Image (cartoon, rainbow, N blue to C red; front, side):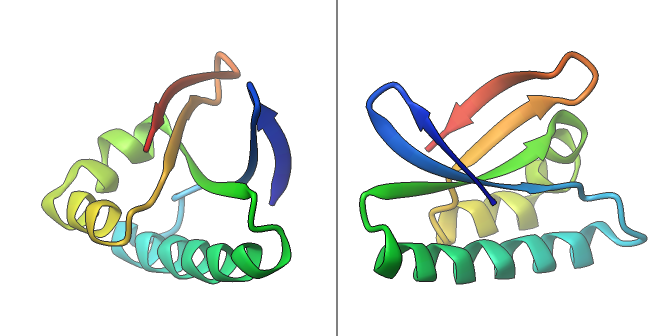
Length: 94
């Protein structure tokens, strides 16, 4: 997990690769870690917002399916979508 600042907002970023054998298993693992870290962060540093960082391929893949969209929506996951090749953040989704 990385700590950073976005403007005046204190954030933490959990970067996930989504390159395992199963996109669903990758989503399960990423979501579980995100929720655990968010819970711990709310107790240790309540002013910091947690984002799940995913590469464009993952966002356009599993995170754009009905399952991925439901998980992000239901669990109120804040997403940061980045391009590994260009090394730029493409989207901030709250």
